Amino acid sequence: MASTRERMVVSTVLLVREQGARATSIDDVLAHSGAPRGSVYHHFPGGRQQLLSEAIDYAGEFVAARIETATDALEMFDVLHHDYREQLLRTDFRAGCPVVAVAIEAGDSESDLHEHAGAAFGRWQELLEQRLVAQGVKAARARELAGLAIASIEGALVMARARRDTEPLDNVHRQLRTLLRVELNDGSPA
Amino acid sequence: MASTRERMVVSTVLLVREQGARATSIDDVLAHSGAPRGSVYHHFPGGRQQLLSEAIDYAGEFVAARIETATDALEMFDVLHHDYREQLLRTDFRAGCPVVAVAIEAGDSESDLHEHAGAAFGRWQELLEQRLVAQGVKAARARELAGLAIASIEGALVMARARRDTEPLDNVHRQLRTLLRVELNDGSPA
Figure 1: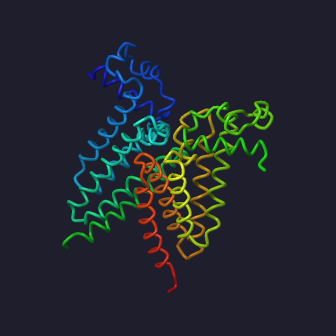
Figure 2: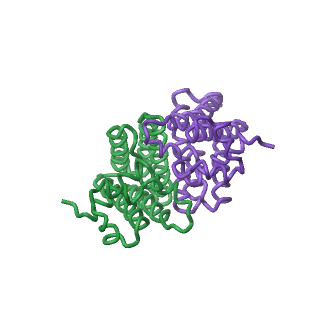
Figure 3: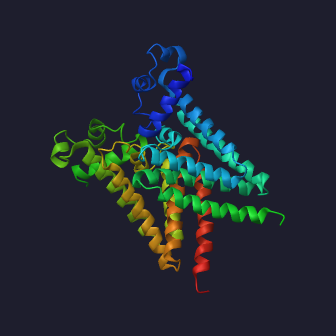
């Protein structure tokens, strides 16, 4: 069973991906996780900022661990598409990417939340890039393609939520899959 | 000079693209626009929801009018990239796309804001699609490419804000430009 600490972090992720970071209060997290009030400053002495940044790190690692299970770059992209798609359908299009939700509200220059969001995107991009390189794509090209893949799937997830339709996500999946396949064949010795 | 009504809509757009829809209150809009309090229910009897949905429609039309000035599909995409890039640099990476900001907070099923966000994305995609068709790309292919272009630039804008770096946006611009150019040459009679 998850610790109180972990339950609070997971609740924060689930709330932020539906309603955004600014709208998510400590009270919401306590109500959602069932944690006692005292646990906030016990586990998160930095308060709401610490809870939010740990939630983003957690979400970043969760997705990274999911895509790392893939055997190759194409399957990595399939996993990303599959997971976001299922999440949209399961939540009636309410749940998007918590990292995007934080990134777009990170206008406050006092906050370092945008750095956590940037690190999560960077980690996913790097994993895809490394896999492409391992499959024979040149480093610079792998980096460009991985950047395009992450950007397009994240943008499509936002469009899919707005339209209440998975089509934008499915389209980007098909387009990037074709692009990656061409690139992987060009890079192969055959 | 802009009317009080228009100033209020523009203020809403400017606030939402920096801080998100939920964090933007009627008081913020009054302070930013300098409009008197009475103007809210005079001009926007539907209150905050009406103000937000008109702001999204305004932003949608503003971008549509900008890209319609382009002479061809490639230039359309150049304009999108240029405008978002300038906006990031001018605001120290605080200002993103107001339509994305609304779309990711549109979890509330009572609200029709997501429909306005979906319509704005749809309009931009359609303009790009029509231009591609006019330049000889088949309708189904034009639709796919336009969807990928809008998704990837919107996703890259979010990543650029998180990283405080225009690189994700510049990369997507280069990748999509190459892709569109290949497609346009394939479609040409030459």
